[in-house]
Image (cartoon, rainbow, N blue to C red; front, side):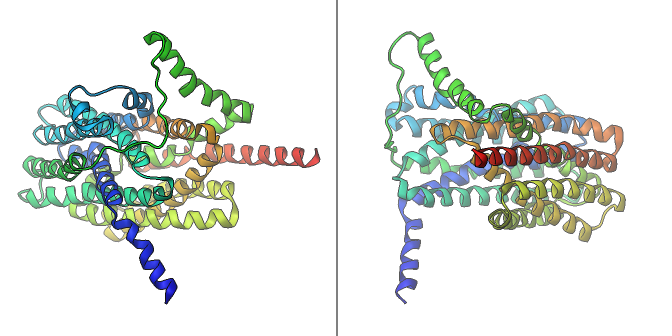
Length: 446
C-alpha cells in the first residue's frame, strides 16, 4: 500500500506549473512539423500539383536539419524591445511562435493552383520559424528546472509534441474533409483547416506570455572581449571545430565509415516518405481514410516499434538491432510496391502502414541509441546536433527528386528503388561491426 501511494505521489510532478508549461510548449513545437510538408503534400496533390514539384517542396524541411547553424543567435542576440519586456528566452519564443502562426495562416490564404511559388515561400518561412521555435523551446526546457526535474520535463515535452503531430496530421485531414463540399478537391476546405491550425498556436503564445523567464543554472559563455571578428572566431573554434576534431581523434579512420552510415541510414524511409501522401491520393484513398490509418494508427505503431526496439537493444545490442532495422525499413518499401500493384484496398493499406511504422520505430530507436553512443560528454549537444543534421541532409536532399523519379519509373519501381538504397547501409553496418570487434580484440590483447 505504501508503494502504491508513493507511486501516486510520484505522478504529482507532472502537474507542477513548470511541467505543464513545457507540455504546452511541446505542443506548440510539434504542431508545425506536419503542416510544413506532411499534410501539405496531400493538399498539393489534390490540387493537381505535379509529383516532381511536390518532391522539390520537401526541401523546405531541410531547415530542421541545419538549425544548429543559427542556434547560437538565440544565446547571443537580443530581440529589440521584446527583450526588455520578456527576457531573452521568452522574447525569442514569442517571436518564433508569432512567425509560425503567421506563416500557417498565410499558407491558408494561398491558392497553390494560382501561385505555387508564394505557397513555397510561406512554407520556407514556416520551416525556419518552426526550427527556431524548437531551438528556443529546448533551451527554455533545460533552463527551467534543476537536473532532477529534467526527465519529467522531457516526458511532458514529448507528450505534447506527439499529440500536436496527431492533431496537425489527422486533424487537418479530417477538418479539410469536413469543410469540403463533396469528395472532389475543394480549396476552401484546406484553407479553413489550415486557419484552424494557425489558431491552435494560441495556447503556446499565451503560455509564453504568462510564464516566467527561466534562469539557467549554467553560466552562459559571453564573448564580450575583442572585435566582432574575434568573437566569431572564438565561437567557431569552440562550437564547431572542437567537436569535430574530438570525434576524428577518437575514431580515426573509422570516423569516415560512421559518418557514411549516419548519412545513409534513413535514405530508404525518408525518400519513400516524401511521395507517400501523393501515392495515397493517386490510389484513390480519401482524406478520412488516410487520417484514420496513417496518421493515427501509424503513429501508435511507431511508438510500439520504438518501445520494442529498446527491448531488443537491451537483449541483442545496438549493432544487431541497427542491422535488423535497416532490413525491415527496406522490406516494407517492397510492401508499398506490392500495394501499388494491388490498387485501392483499405485492409492492405492498414497492413502495409502498420508494418512500415513498426519497422520505422525499431530502426529509429536503434539509430538514436547508436548516435548517442558516439558523442563525447564534453560536446554532447553540439555533436548530437551535428549527427542528427547529417542524418537528414542526404535523405532530404535526395527525397526532393522523388517526384520526378515516380513520373519516370512509376510507383512500383520507385518503391523498389528506395528499398535498394538500403543495401549500402547493410554493408556499412557489417564493416563497422567487424572494425569494432577488431578494436575490442586488440585492446583485450594489450
